[in-house]
Length: 348
Image 1 (cartoon, rainbow, N blue to C red):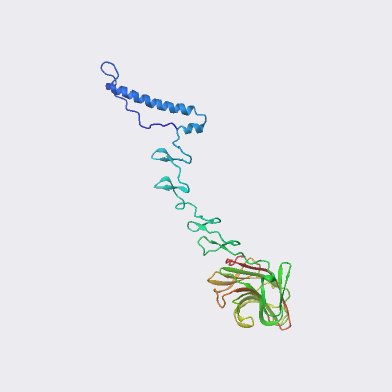
Image 2: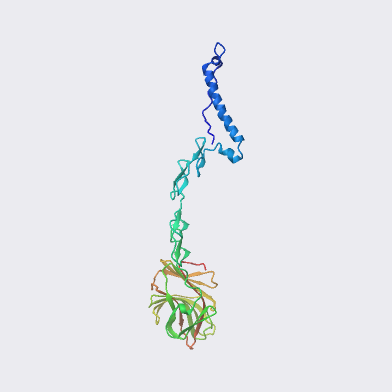
């Protein structure tokens, strides 16, 4: 790099002191010319170096103040200046209006510390620690970054091997990716259960009655929450009172055990397709909600209650109540059974 002194040229001596009475240069004049010559030589050397450079980069290098790998060219106080390379791990930041290096993490450095960590954001950049083997990333508005690792949904293909049956007169079969449940007549709750998961959770079921009840028959099917003894059942019913065309209703019932009905919390008529029905229960740890859908896309809130009302579930299940008078066997085809570690609400 060619160094250029930026001190100004000395002022030109006045005419009165430039030449003495003998016609010779005065001492101040001689000193001024010596200084001027040095300045001109410096400028000339710089011009020669620039004009003789083999490339624009080489020409720039004759003027650049940079000396070390990683140096940056900055501007301060009216002058181009060198900012030396920072320490490993430092980040470029602004300090009092000037570019400077600072320790990472204080103003834009990565918060990640462990293999598998993810970048998240709340009000600032934040770290989402890596989950455990087999977990999946899921949305959770209760978390700082709105995301968390959780166990994946419990199988979308309902298979009898995934459940434990309870009650007599119930049989199951797996066919074409569907679970078929057959329940004989009886004023008791029968069904299939599997271990529950902690809140938040969503339980979805898509099922249909394979045959309609006849006169004086009634059959209900849906989702059951149980603590191993008592049940909170959310199911749809096809009820044939005095005609062969059944009324369609849904109910949320309490059972102290599988043989003892306690009360209906909600009972209401509704329009649904008995051969293709969708029910959903969600619980975010505060509120338990019950939804119905006729198409699996648009879910309507039916009822809500505080979490763990009546039962703190240790089991989730597919339940059926066959209160028929004509030895009618309820045949139910379950197309989808899905449990997820998140609250889906009124979206599929």
